[in-house]
Length: 388
Figure 1: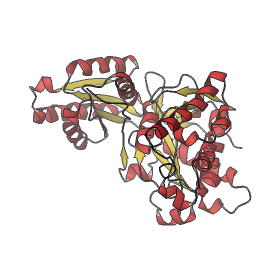
Figure 2: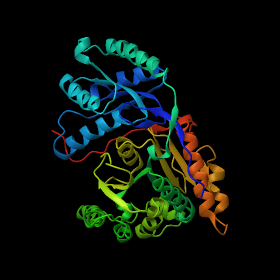
Figure 3: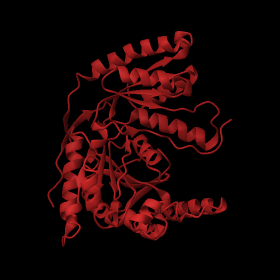
Figure 4: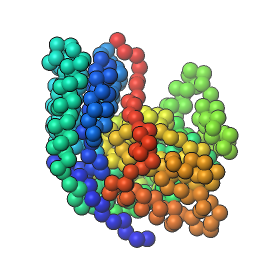
């Protein structure tokens, strides 16, 4: 197999490499959500992430919230951050953590404009415009493929997902990791019935134990509330497409992870230490899962689907991959990699993985995905428990 080529990216002071160069307008309090969106809409090159909840978070919720905000700010696809808040101490604490990771960050709070959102928008627009102007002078430069950290997701799966899209993705992931790159997968419920296969690839007994206990915990939580996973996962869409059980779905889903050892199990939005393949404790719902991957520093996501799923990450270009012939004909402006012509061939994986590799490097070099072109991206951090 031909070696993956280097790409041209944006080199960050901390040694990471971005494939995009956003000014991130990050609103960390609900009261500043609308002004942040107005600022982002007014300035070219901005991406807006808003958190509608803030005050009163406790326990795991508070910990995850903080880690995710810092991680989203420090994603290498951001060249600078404008942090907006109605709570100055919270903004200052977050800004210190973001600066410690080598990211450029400026703060704007409602306190500085005497609680006037109109003035906040005016001042924030000028600040974001200056950051965008500064970033526009940066140029892409060569970077090794080992600098890529790729997130994995499958959604609205069908038999073609397990037969073509996921194993083709897995073959590419094996190649990426062999050349020093990193990949992260999650969706813990979709390990059920296949967790023993993941555990067999664990780099340590501790990792193997978590790969088994995490899905068991999710299943137990569902049963404790009276929820039958059948009908929820697999979903009615999965069932209509031909998947009969969560085990069948899981066996197809984990094939997107390839065959390399699993080097660790990350908490939600946790950044991996080192390279290789990592699992993450995430929900399977696309908005929450993709956001956790972006907060962990992934620059690109590979999203396989059978029936089609239009959601993409706002921060990470999300490459949609499909092997369903009917879906590919119907949703021609959703899928970035079409594999539908391979489903009846004798040896589809080499061709499928090559197409995915080519698309990944094209996107890393600046080619836009359909999701970016159609502005379908968003970012949603998971919640864990009640707030005060």
